[in-house]
Length: 321
Image (cartoon, rainbow, N blue to C red):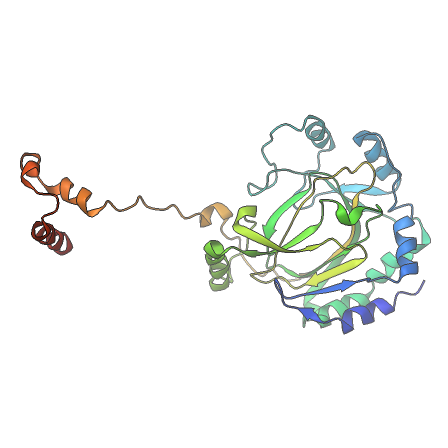
């Protein structure tokens, strides 16, 4: 099948500025191509009765568990957590409350997925991505793959590491009700009281950026549309996040996912979100309380509470000291 038209989709798409600079193309694939993609055996996993059976089906179709942000790689730990659903300590990042698993497809078996994968790996496609965002193609390298994200997958708001030059996500969800499921990517902005974190990143380009708690940001946009692609080049404000809570036994959150990475390391490790927490000082005592604290106990009874001249004299004394 011919996928050259995808290059034009990217080249002609306008850049959106809200909530940050990104490209968002709806109906990325043609209707015919998309129908073939989401019905391919690697994407449309049949409904199963248990988590154990789901893993068996995914492994049989060539998926492998990968070490991915927001995830663990121990299948038994995940199965136990998903079965018990009890309170847990996040094993990947303290800004998250849950954890999940991500699996990436290895070798494609159907012709449509094999051809699509080869196209998305092509130099022509990679260069189109780099050119759209003004990146030096010779300074980056590429990775891509079809991935499934299981229930519990969570990555809290973050702008991406400075070592990443570009990222893209294409929704290829096989479930007919996928757009109503709670597993989509949120695009966010810092709340006013936490914008100092973004300012810190701006002023310290030598330090890497971190994940932050959900309540530090407001969700402004959700990429729920199937057959849509979002592309952006990470900056200090490209906040995005996912918190998947859905039944993955019927169908799974599925994406074609890819990145351009800088060949040379761009930064050193930076502060974690805990380092940005501001601990407020105790409130300053009121003037009457300050007065009481410096007046000897034996003379407190002599002071009339509404005697303005005495208050002014003591107040002035406090300012001098």
